Picture 1: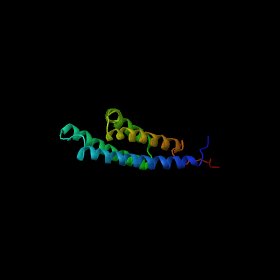
Picture 2 (picture 1 turned 135 degrees about the vertical axis):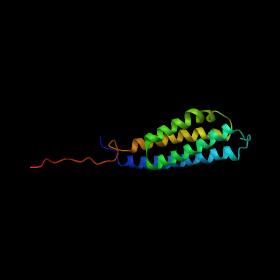
Picture 3 (picture 1 turned 180 degrees about the vertical axis):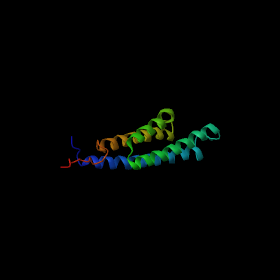
Picture 4 (picture 1 turned 90 degrees about the vertical axis):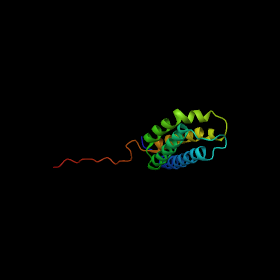
Amino acid sequence: MPRLASSSCSAAAGRLLGVLAALSLAALWAVFLFRNPYAASDADATRLVGYTMIAGAAIAAAAAARGAYVAMYLLFFVMFVPVGFYVLLTPGMFSAIGWIEIGYLAAAILVHLGTPADGGQKKRVSHPVD
């Protein structure tokens, strides 16, 4: 089934949304670590989780920029299941982390739907030699 021209637009929109969401996640995690208005994050475990999530957000931005939707799905589950879902249910401004991660999942779905089934590769047709 041929894809519509809007599929490339949805892939581009998904890539842009994914990059913006991932950069927003990195910024919110940095605020959580260094300017947390609710509590001091002096615990080593808290810092380790925060730095890991910032690194994950940077990798997620790179995956979104490349349009690698499988990596985007994987990074969503790696970041959302352990921590994102927890902060989604907490009161305060850091619940936005969970909502932004859901937005990142929506971006991955847009990229997936906008990517051709053959991965954008042209198929070679071999012609028999006479």
